Length: 309
Ligand SMILES: [Zn+2]
Image (cartoon, rainbow, N blue to C red; front, side, top):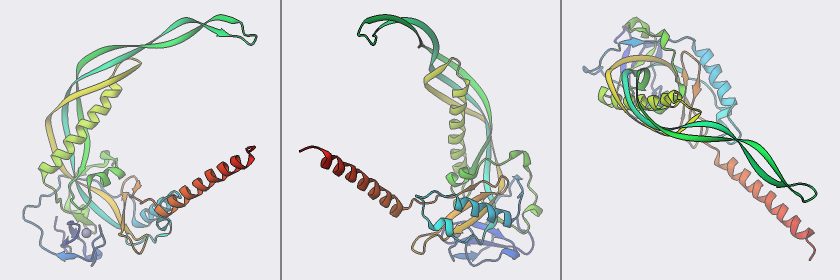
């Protein structure tokens, strides 16, 4: 991953280690905007990705998506986000691991089967007379079920970057895996390409956890009956594979308040999905609570005033 004319740099603050094209020479980190970028030769242990997915749209479109997202933030979010200037958006090939495995599960659950019954009940009519009527009610009978289930889990994607955590990546997922192709160094020319900074062992752990969660979710859909409860499963993962893949994201560090850190916003380079953890506005929430308390106080005062002494 060393296209001609590019430089390998590292960020002293967030730890991102990346390849910068000559056109994107910058003094600040594209991830965290820290002026802590240093040029450093790429580590010998770095591995080339196996696969990559390309960017589908250019920077102006990404800016427009971020602006629209910022304007759509709710009243109780930091108002500065809606007004923040959207600039310095950078396209980054983020290293991630694509994980697949065969998942074998043993599960148990209580399966609910609904049935209807006609029951009689007594009621009092308008004249105060007691009447006996019938009605149809639905009841559920539960029976225990145990079984085994096997599934192929193919599309678990986890971050391989210490600078950009898995929750942040998940917020802009899914990626369109149909567009995946073999990695070719020419693909990243002109783009920032980050090197993986997490070990395969760490990514295996993240991916396994995600795979087991996915299996758990799909088991719910697999249960027979009208309803179920107490579903528990034990899952073993076999024939695992883990491939390094570059995924396209637009990254922006948004300054929304002078006295606060920067807010990182991501845009999925394929689907245009935007995500960022916009903080709540404490001031606006406090004002709303104060207004609600005042309204309650006003009602209480009115009731007390109207009450005959
Ligand atoms: Zn950084």
